[in-house]
Structures are given as C-alpha cells and as structure tokens.
Image (tube, rainbow, N blue to C red; front, top):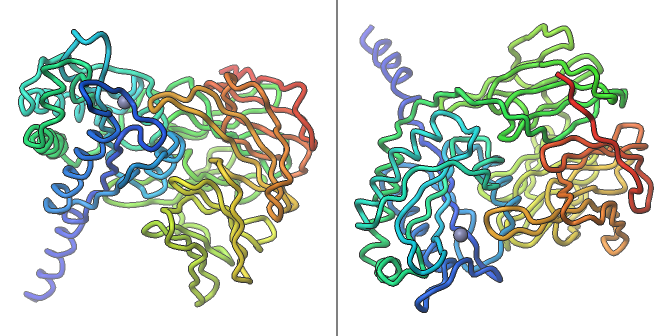
Length: 445
Ligand SMILES: [Zn+2]
C-alpha cells in the first residue's frame, strides 16, 4: 500500500519538476553589430549577457537554449521559428538601446497583444534589471517587435541600457554589471512563475495560411499562432475553429472535413481533431508512416523501428517538413539557411538562405521566404520557388521587398499559392515566373 502512495506521490510531483524550456535570444550578431557607442558593439554585450543568463538558467534547473552562441547572423524568422520549434515555455530577447547619447536607462517590452504571462514577466523583470544595473527606469512598454509578436510562448525583449550614453555604456562594458543583469533576468523569470495564464488578445494579424485538401479554403491563424480560422477564398465566410493558444502552430488537415491541432502547455501536450461542424475530439496524435522531427538541433527520421539522423553537426537545425512523396525532408537552420535531405540515401543539398519552407504537391520544389531585418523588425521579405534537386534553379515569386510576403503554402492542386504579408492573407496564381497579381482575402468576420 505504501508503495502505491509513493508512486501516486511521484506522479503528482513529476509534472512540477519537469524542466521549463527557456529560449535566450542575444539580439543582432555577425554582420549586424546592432547599436554601437563608446567602443562597444551591442551584439557582443547581448551575447555575453545571454551566455551568462544561459549558465545561470542551467544551474537553476531550467533547460535553456540560445538562438546564437557565437558571433553569427541569425534572421529574426530563424530565431522565432527555432523558439517555436523547440516548444520553448518562455522567450527572453536581450538588446541594448541607442538614441541621442543623452537618453539612458532600462526598458522592457512585450507584444501589444501578448499573453498576460508576457505582461507579468515584463513587469517582474524590468525593475529587477533597473535595480541590478542601477539604471534609470524607463518603464515597461509594448511593441510589435518581430520576436515577441511571432513567438508562440510568453516573450519579452529587454533593452538593458543605452550603449551610446557614457554612464550606461560604462556599465554595459563592465562584466560585474553584465553578470548582475543576467541574474536579474533569472529572478524576473522565477518571479513570473510557471503558471501560464493564456488570456491572449486575439490580434487581427492573420498569418500562415494552409490550404484545405480540395484547394477551396484556407486555414489561418493569428500572430503567435493563437486561434484557428477557416476562410473561404472570397473571404466572405470566416469561421472560427478555436481560440486556443498555439492551436495554429503545426495545425494540419487530416481529411477534407477534419483538422488536427495540438495545445501545448508547460505540463502537457494535447492533440485534438475538429471538424468543420466544430465537433472536437481528444486524440492521441496522428501516427505517420514516416515521422520527421528535430531533437537537440538535429533532424531525425523515424520509420517503423528505424531511426536515422538526416543532418550534420555544423549548425542547429529545426522545423523539418517531409515532402508529399515522403522521399525528402526540407528543414531550417539558425545560420546557414535551408537544406534538403533524402530519406533513402545519404544525400543533402543546401538551398541557401530562407525560412518557412513548404513543398509543392509534386515534391519537386520548395517555396520559402527570404527576409531582411534590422535585428528588431523585418524590413522586407520575398517568396521564392526553388528546385529541391537543383537550388540554382530558382524563381523569385515576389519582388517587392517592403511587401513582406512570408509563410507561403502551395495549394494541393499546385495552381495557387497563399501567403501572409503584414498581417493580411493573399492568394495568387502560381507559375514559374514572378507573380503579377495577388488578391487579398478580406477576412470579413
Ligand atoms: Zn538591438
């Protein structure tokens, strides 16, 4: 009897002691120094504080991950997609400010439409960093910075101090203060607590369209992958499928009538299927013939009892997508772009820069976006169609940098492409040439 109670005791305790996954994001890097001043480069300060924070997290029993661990260029899309793909429970981005040399102090941001946990983490963290660095408190603010808007977990961005202000820069350049800043970030995280209050304002930033199997409608989500909506191509019918947080992340059609999505909290991952008539069923998750997944920065394939690693160890890889004919896998990396690995042979092709890859239905091509950013916001993004076998054979589908086309998806009949741009959903005819005309889906709710 006693052992039964002991097991029950363990079962109750275990979820409390599962490790929280924390994604630590050192802003800028590589060719982008960020702000500069007084002989300091922001990218180096951010990385140093991120590494200190990483070590503190490890010692405190968290499971930390870094979006960069050296002086390399990592796109905002890669940072965000990586955090989402590892199922991070919290995202903390570290930056330094600059203005006119007289502005000074610490400020911390969360997304304007962020979850209440994001707001709480921001409110707990900012005064602790102010205290630790003995800086002026510029307060807690909201912003639409890419990494806090498009990550699907509670997220903040902390501007530690002003690198172009003499007094602030002296502290940023001092290892003592950088260590104290890292300790403050840890304290802020701990004081935020583990409970995820998922009250999230559903934004009207629609992203990540996914074609229905009959190519007649699109499944879309909002920034942060919160909620799921089904929209007809004329935009006149917008049906809310669910408002659940993260439901839009890796949601998929399992038949012409049914969608599968998962809801992930710090304690558990639950799978649901839901029909167009909103009949919702708790499921075990779909079993696939070939399962591809990322684990600790490598891409793996599981087929029956055979488990095989498809990637090398030169970069951190994530977000694998199996081709419709199940012969290839395309995946993203933090610093070196997209890759295609072959399932049956030991062959890998580098596609070059890109994010958000998806396949054409005939498995011959990849569509993806290539973006430019300033370390805080995406400045421009265009869509590309790239041959999976020959990356030199590539078509620029959009050529309007400021349009910011992202997250493309080709219709199952191969005739159309859907994507999001600045929070709106667009559809265009897909050929092997530049898209001449695209239609905005009006999303009439
Ligand atoms: Zn910055």
